[in-house]
Length: 506
Image 1 (cartoon, rainbow, N blue to C red):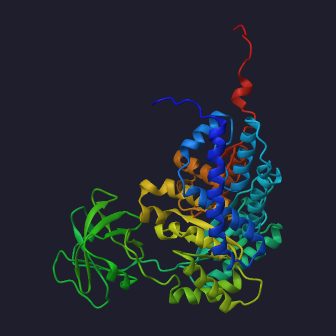
Image 2 (image 1 turned 30 degrees about the horizontal axis):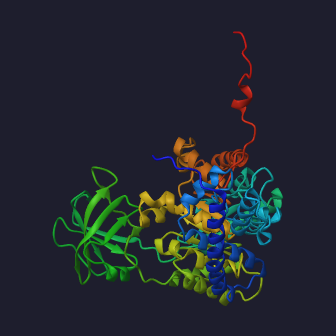
Image 3 (image 1 turned 90 degrees about the vertical axis):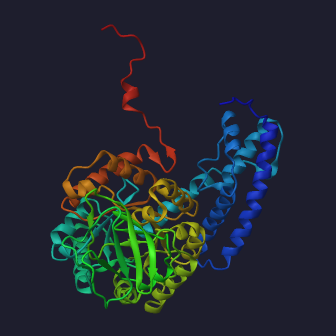
């Protein structure tokens, strides 16, 4: 490592002035593209800030950051919610260091540094409901059929700290969903606490819908193969033959030799070895267990790297929306890829409810396309309705690869913060504790990350869900005293207080 001489303030000021001009010009161009479609007046400021942030992040400013830090100035590393204010403050400080008065870039009002955080918190409360004063992060819990007949369980979840109850429309049906919602409303009245109802529209999720095998054990191991089929009428003739049905057979038309196929979030990985008229042969390259994995119905299929031309809303989704639009406070849409998907989702809600009292929507981001188009997705949705983003880390990890997951989920968080859009931190949060009652070290750290960075953390159902909600509620409150987004909050440390400042004889 070569140590560099500290840059002169005059040089830094010149760089900052050039950066500001470029960011402003590019940001305003982007904002003007969005502006005509924004209907909510209170989103214009957020859209502008998002545009400026995107303009800044198109540039590599790491060297400039290092130079600014040596002068005790902001390194521009925490400006998501206040992009131009931070840049202007640095310019103003540099101008004073060198004794040059630049009136155009006087210090911004201190309120401009807090406004984004205030707006984000306000929108989070609109989306997830009122949260306890000791924490700003909401807790969302997935429930299913057992809770439809168990009012006490739902009441205890609300008392333990649940703010949003999530119904996955991929499972059960309107009769079960209505019973769950009735239990929620009854518990709200009895406890005096609010709980929003979120309904998750499944979207075009490919699943195994049948397995046909001549084998005694229909397990697959590394090196073995199976036939992924696009039709129902078929048979197995060879004693080693294994055929698997895909719930969205049209997907197979997009596959070619070398295309990746993942089963159950990567429990089995394979590649297309050959293509036939009625499907593809998949050669297994990895399995979660050395002895192989048994293929089961209803497990998910992913096709990383393949562009799938699928409608964001299926025929079943349309039926589910008939119920959800009437009864849900929030509707989550899966596999959002671009602004056209958002327009389709909003149009489907409008068809069923043309009043101003519409449910909020959450876009689940779980593909690279969704990440690449996230700024446009936000501008299209948040400019019209109460809106949030869910980081669906299960499918996202499968689609993008685990190597990139940590990096990409951070980028989603930064962009959403710049737009004052609330985020749901989802998938396998405290899963071990929910299942066994005992958290693992890794998942406690993961929950802390969600507590610091997101406005809502989601848990899936399990035998110890009530205890997990209580644990998470306390965990969130503790973390809030230590960190907010990227900023550590330096409360007095117990360790520091115990250090003796003077020698003490033993």
